[in-house]
Length: 332
Image (tube, rainbow, N blue to C red; front, top):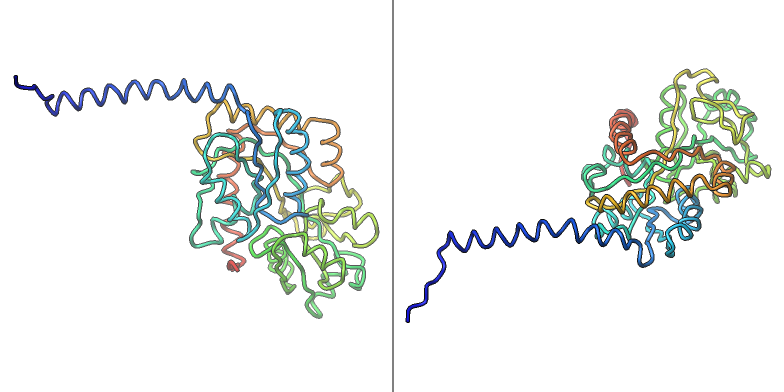
């Protein structure tokens, strides 16, 4: 008896049929998985060392998200390469909603112009969930610095250079200082650190003179009289420090350098999971205790949609590309 082997065409037809069935099943499988989400702890990656603004935001949100999601949200600090290491971890994580990241303006909008090669694409490799907050930087001075106002600083800076710390080369604090150097015709010397926590520690110790920093890192020390706030970098005065003038109103109209933060998941994370995360993050931001704590640290709550956040990231990449090129900044 002769066996009739299937032709190539028949084999291909059967294969396509199997793939078609599998393709129809995938959305159903993904929907089922999303319906059960979350069924285990969620890893919340912070691409910077403990103590900075991103860490403060993640830990504040993490506590409330643990309640809302019904699973433990574990903050995982993964610093290095101006935040690129932690971002890369999440960009290549399994897109199931169990690994998310606290993204920052540097990782998403500045680094693409700063680094010749990036281990991830800030647009292609992430599923934006929401922009959670924005914050102007404050120029804080150690009390030993012999100035009491921004105008005094500019006058003395023309006589001899001051130094200023930042969370790293290419950080918002660094580029803000370089932008001020260009606009004011002064030369402040940049002292980079691997994160804002150590930079603030050295500022408090008088090892550096000035620092452009987010309010969350310096406001408690400013209120305690351990640091002096000279100026803020937003377009308007901050509600957290209404008596501190802006650079724009101090002789440099149009000057604005605002940091922003958001939550993202790996690209291809199921839409129902992104929707669940978006809803719970926004609820966490609206919680009175969370809102009060973040506002007290100088953060302005946002809570945008995934689509709005995605569009904002693209616009900020274009904006900061010009600033990076003008500063001549190079990665460590």
